[in-house]
Image (cartoon, rainbow, N blue to C red; front, side):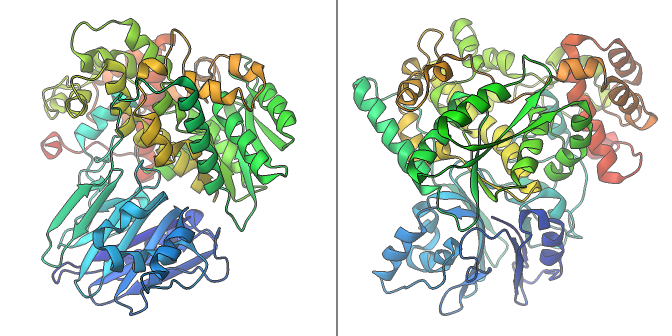
Length: 600
């Protein structure tokens, strides 16, 4: 696991050769063990490495044997042994022990299609010296981030994290009003946008090629199916296939030359991954969970029972309001933009705990999006099929600042800078799904390109790497996704039972009490904290002179909402607070929003 950064002149613009190393210096948490760099007159690459494979012979950047291709990798390529065999059979033996070393050779053999042979989680930057061509690529699901921009003066710059990219002197910090509007609804900024107008995040399963004449072309090389075609597969065959694919996915994620553990909440997904992994390893794992004083949010007893069932060495950290306040700046600093999922607080604490014992962890993330596991899918189904699907799903998905409250708070000048405000940003995403498919399959398709990479995987990546821990998620194996996404939603959500096929498979490994438990997502007792310990902090921030003068909201209306502090506005207040705190952190001093004219 690494942080990567680089810049390419693309036709004679300034290259700023010191930028990549400076960017990696501020991403040292992503790769505290080793650094490396490469530079020519027109291109510079750098990386900071967390050693997991090839501890003594896996340095980056990696080069082809003839020196004409150089690459840096953030992530893990799980099938690198098979790729070595493939390349050796074609006269391209790969030296060294790390997975990254297959990349330049695979590119020489397959060209830009090399990415389609990779199984894993990755963001790759590859420079073809002969063609003066920069290739950026992301994994199929979007587990590893890659931000990029066209700096003033030309060329391209990229980095694994936003704060690192912003070190480039040619990249401005003007905020994007559309990104702010999206954030307030969804609590995240969906790719390809970022909170900065000039910066974009490369979407999942994307290859972007930048040529010497400054041109850019990109393509998507993989997509979730959600075709619903597996209607007649017998239940036993369906379950056996899911079981076999999950077994393979776990197996592929166990290779590590450093200590490996697992996140264990006590719920279905993490329990199943832990049970399968301990069987395959044949030895105890370190497992990690968090607990709360509020019983409604505390799964620690369930996690402990599951740890005893699997024979793991279990560790628990109990989170209180003080942890929430302490984690806010950690979350926003590593996100680099507003992010308002309180579960990031719990994730940060879990990965900090894990870092005391291991370097790699298995997680149960990713099953809800493919097995129809979220409660909102049931709510969408129960709404019926009347009216526009995008509008119906917007009602069950938006949980930041609801549309009517946003409209009430916005200044006229800010609202005028938004496209057709109020705007349902999900409509364009639903337009890319099959209109003949059932509503639930279309909703899961939208979530796979939005909710999964932009909310869940952003949280996992940033919070794990903040503490120099590599997370691996078997449910995000693309072979498992390829199969499960073709199973109709009606076979996954059966009555009120979510994830029906996965629960049948889990019954082969887990006690009945785990299968029968009500689903509980990783969450924190936000409403209780907001009503007590966090209220003064949030009120002070939102009622500060700087917050009231940013230009987003009518000051009097914002004052009234904050002072009233309604319980039903808990997530709205948290969302507003995280936006304001992000503004404070990025400047270190009070500031105002860009002038209305500059927000166009």
